[in-house]
Image 1 (cartoon, rainbow, N blue to C red):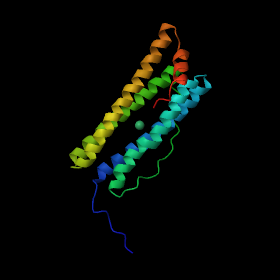
Image 2: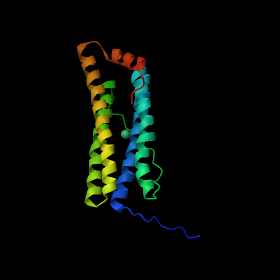
Image 3: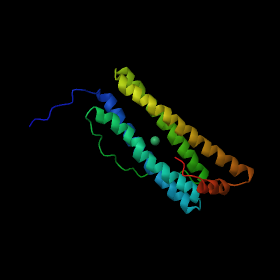
Image 4: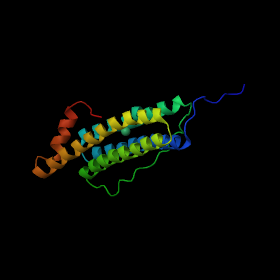
Length: 175
Ligand SMILES: [Fe+2]
């Protein structure tokens, strides 16, 4: 039997952009896995736990948000490729935390571009859905900023990063 096409079509540029954001979320997940490993090996069990939880969130619910949009148009996103993150220029634990902040900020920028593209091409439902994602993405940026600044202060006023690490290990796993 001939399979009928979806009666709801999606602009090709918008589709590509959504698929790129899907890959971005997976990339962030792989990055945070590596960050977690490095921090764990350096003795930061609490920070490692934070990034392991973050990695699962990126590849799980965050990637799912994009899949949900594409599925509404009867599109299956391609399986994400695994890219080995490059941590060579990020030597210290603080460098890694800054990298995470930067990663979330870059994601916000990219979602803004996808949203603008959707508006330009008259995909208003997609624009609205990306707008909702963008709101939660900005919260992710704020959380990454807070963690970085907290550790930065701890590292410079002598209380030490390890104290932050221990409080993270004691508290509930943060996203
Ligand atoms: Fe994410």
